[in-house]
Image (cartoon, rainbow, N blue to C red; front, side, top):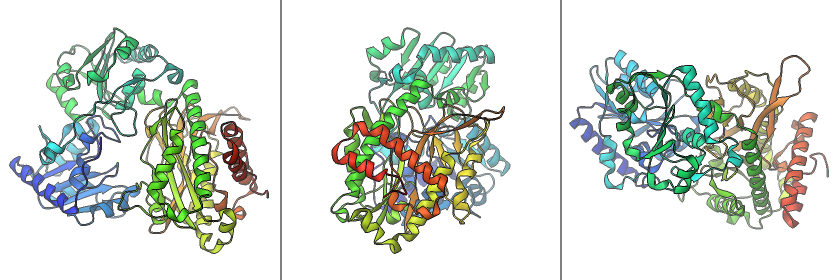
Amino acid sequence: MSSPKSSPKSSIDKRLASLRSTLKTQRLDGYVVPSSDAHQSEYVGAPWRRREFISGFSGSAGTFACTLDQAGLWTDARYWTQGQQQLQGTSVALFRSGAPHVPDWQDWLVKNLAKGSRVGLNGSLFSIDQYTALEKTLTQAGLQLITVDQDPIDGVWGHDRPELPSTPVRIHPQTFAGESVDEKLGRLRQRFKEEKVQGLLVTALDEIAWLLNLRGNDVEFNPVFYAYLWVGETLVKVFTDTSKISADIRAHLGSQFQWAPYGDFMGFLATLPKSQPLWVDPTTINAAIGKTLGDYSLKTYEQPSPIPGWKSVKNAAELNGMAQAHRQDGVALVKFLRWIKEHPNVDQLDEISVEVQLEKFRKLNTDYIGPSFATIAGFGPNGALPHYRATRESNLKLKSPGILLLDSGGQYVQGTTDITRTIVLSRGGAGDVRAQQDSLAQPKKIYTLVLKCHLQLARTQFPPGTLGLQLDAIARQPLWQHGLTYGHGTGHGVGAALCVHEGPFSLSTRRNFHPIQIGNVLSNEPACYFEGDFGVRIENLVSVTSRASSGPTPFLGFDDLTLCPYDRDLIDLEMLHREEISQVDRYHERVVAELSSQLKDQDLDFLKKVCRPLQGP
């Protein structure tokens, strides 16, 4: 399903006026709308895009808050420029989260509401942990936190609000899952005995898909389906749109599984025994479910679920599937690079035509399912927007010479890909680029610095227990030495034929204490942006593997999964040291070795040309 219908900026203020009218009838003085759905998803299906509907901001991360006379949208550095553009002309103010002297939305509510004021929210959109922390903050400030029975945004949205998706669910082959559902349930039930619980509530959509070896299409770009799951000692009960579950799936999963409508989940909780605790992950179970458990006097064991950690450590079959997906993706990307690098009329192309052509090349692969996220094809100043997406209004014509940032990915039967390449455009190929060194001097310098960051992380060895924030700092060194940095993390986990963003670890400045482990798959994507001018980002997916060690401590390192040439026309060789040049050459040799058999004629010639040694002819 599509996003909330776009409309003139003036309609946002009309929606706000309607919302405030409803708040007054409910005796609410403020209201908060996060980005999430009832499953705490990062990317949500169309019925849950309430924050986008009420604010006009379409980024994947942000929080809307309002009082009866003010409104604001809080988002991080990835979306500051996008937020400024989309909120311009409305009465919704942009608050740049993380910038100096910018209050968070909780402090803003405290500052702008009198003591005794009532702040409303939809309890299903906040995890138990989030709700508990917010309630404490507001109570200490003399405000009341009120959970609404009906979300007032839905009343404003009315009949235009989309229905719950009903796309089919499919079996994810064990050839690529590497572990049967029975084996995964056996692992989980062993933990039940150790923790002395009767079972686990699972509401995170990617956890459900992974545990059941099923995939769906309810959320754009994410192969998941809307469901709740109860795993007991002998019974597994799935709450979803049962029309999506085929006879083959029912037979595949067996008699221990029961199926029920999605809307029956809350009522089912009343049937659980009260004698033994049930396992609840307070970071993913929403506050509305938490309240219902309390109303039914059920005992809970509130601890993080083991599933995210298990899911993030890929087994041999999953890693093999990811490698297969990246080979197919690499073939599509080489064809695309030749198309755009050798295009006779680059100036007649635009960002949307680039996105369309790349999708055509990916669709030539029979195992390709669809994009793993919305393609970012940002030319010039649009490339400086980390999470840009071209629209009819923003779509820029390409020009040569010029810099195109292309971040894209694919969902394949075997696995998930995510790659960014920054590309210099020119009418006459590399010779034309060399003839215009003055105009490309700054982009080449920045590209090479970002490449140095990318290469530095790729060759880093580290002991077990190393955290993502430590590796993030290592990656940034070449840019930091020039007084440059970027506002987002250096890397995120990636699912195996699942969501392109996956925890529980990350490579960022956030205080994430989940260590990087063998079997993790993550991105290596340093960047540098110049607002209004251009952006550079280089991204490969890598897997974490063991490294030879000369001492008693084992060491880990990264192996590239992504197979696609860097843009040699943007590399300043004088800025690279010998080891970095050798590193690029070895990577390009591998790209040629792995992709040559699947390319022919001009595509193969192009690949060999762009992957020749950096110091060669």
